[in-house]
Image (cartoon, rainbow, N blue to C red; front, side, top):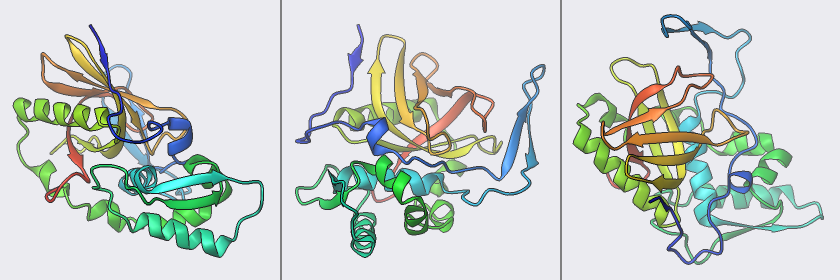
Length: 247
């Protein structure tokens, strides 16, 4: 029997991909090529380089902050851009580690959602969400260099499932180390469990137009990602971030 993640917090809605994600992508500096015969992944430098790169953790963090701390009131009237900038800044200064949505959200009048805001004010959000340093200096980056045990990955899967079942998206660092085939941030927002696996649905900042499915194999006690334009697919390690003092 399957169980589906449901909200247990006092919110009127759950995380919605079409509302609560950015309309632009974090791009990669490299083009990833997978040999169909050997499945070996190689990289080549993109030319010209994209303007907005290395910000997967930036967008994951910001998407969670907007979900927790912002409320949108759609209006056809053109809003005050100075006021909007101040309100966006207030949202981005709030705590992404909050265990639940707070009772006094920042009200943004004009756009109907984060996705709508990021369509109308893409450059504003890109400039305000944070620089590349937020990815490099993400508090929990140290964890990826330590050994990863299958029992620990099972605990991570349970932790992520518990978070999304509480109605809050779970920010997750997925990686392969020391083989740096992937080092990336995702935002899990739904989870379905059966006897064999837990299937998470995630916002992937690198792929802004559709959700990503990540599976936790309960027998192997491993996370598995599908092939994307930046990863050949397969086993990954994971841990939750923006979730406590250490991470």
